[in-house]
Image 1: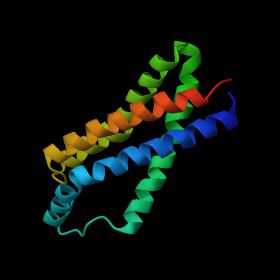
Image 2: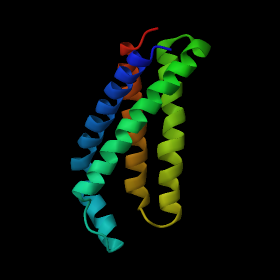
Image 3: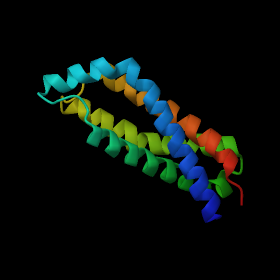
Image 4: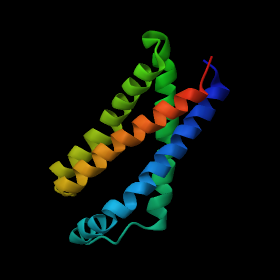
Length: 135
């Protein structure tokens, strides 16, 4: 495992996750504000954005760590990147978002959009960032 290349690929993945997330904001921004206001919460603050930025960096690093760990087993880069994306998506996006709906915190439509968008984010991030990792 090449740690320097892993970190580089992880940070590239993180940047791609952040960029993809920024593309989602214009699509669901007003819906998110409405959902938050129904819970008597203000729109997302700068502090919340910093938090999500940090989470995105962590997810990028974790995604590429998992990719690197799985690569010897699956051999093919694309297949490994897709598998790593689905694992991280299920654990970090799907389960968390479904629980938000189950608790009544988030509307189903907004959750479906965000959850599917998250899968796309991770797929884009892992497929591109995997090009920057080699042993």
